[in-house]
Amino acid sequence: MRKEYNPALLPAASPAMITFEETSRFSQLQQSCVATIGKFDGVHLGHQLILDQLKQQAEQLNLPSLVILIEPHPEEFFSASDEDCPARLTSLREKLELLESFGVDFVFKLNFDQAMSELSAENYIEDILVEGLGVAKFIVGNDFRFGHNRQGGFPLLQSKGAEFGFEVIETAAYERNGQRISSTFIREQLAQDNFDLVEQLLGRPYSMKGEVERGQQLGMDLGFPTCNLNPGRRKIPLHGVFACEVRLGDRYRQAAVNIGYRPTITEDGSALLEAHILDFDEDLYDKTIEIIFRKKVREELKFDGLDALKKQMTADVEQVREIFSQAP
Image (cartoon, rainbow, N blue to C red):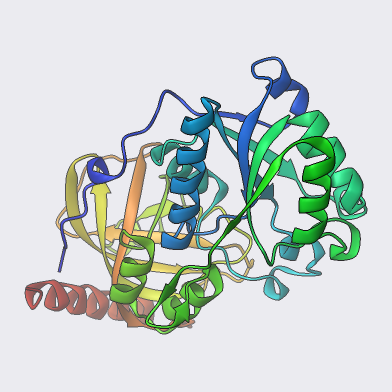
């Protein structure tokens, strides 16, 4: 089941990436940069091509590479409820770790709020790109829209680039077998449990990472102790029970994982990931672990009582063992 996933095989990171939220912080350290912008949800192969282009252009000019990371996603900001917004592939923490692993020097976390949504396209360019970051080259897709009511686009960037002395470089969309690869497409494949295809599109298995938190101890009481993680996103892209691997440093253990909005007994609506690591009894509280999704076992269920829950958990664990026993 486990393909050779080794975080050490990711590109070697440059010296520690610096993340900031005010352009004044950057101006204290640098005068100029080569930049790109986006949500970078998933940091998939299309994003990785942009990051490669970013680093190449930065090296040519002997300037730092910088990603303008839009947070929260505009769709999240404008959504009336969690249900209305798109699911996130990666939490902010996961995104930052991935960007650092690909050698990005700086990340400007652009806070998307009401004021930002009302900023004109012209001020967007002049205040952020020119005055704030001193962008020398700006790498962006030709369909990129920005500014109040999405007024700004590639032609305006080119015009303002000529006026203020920065170059605008177009990125090509990444396609596989004629299909444009996007975060939306990957979300759709996750919803269909196509984990092998998602792994190809991400360049790594799909996973979630976080610190183990103390929960209700319900699993312990039922004989199935779990590691509880907060998925760290408004809307999760997966729901149900899965056969997973848990990475503990350089160790891998098999696990039955439930992820959902506390569906088992309570109904408070908060997202939770619960991992029962098979044949394991170490204390992992406050430690960071990574959950690697391999195969779906079943959908979420709501149980009337603990006896029904325990019976189903027993069946889930046995099915997970069977899945891994049949893996090549």
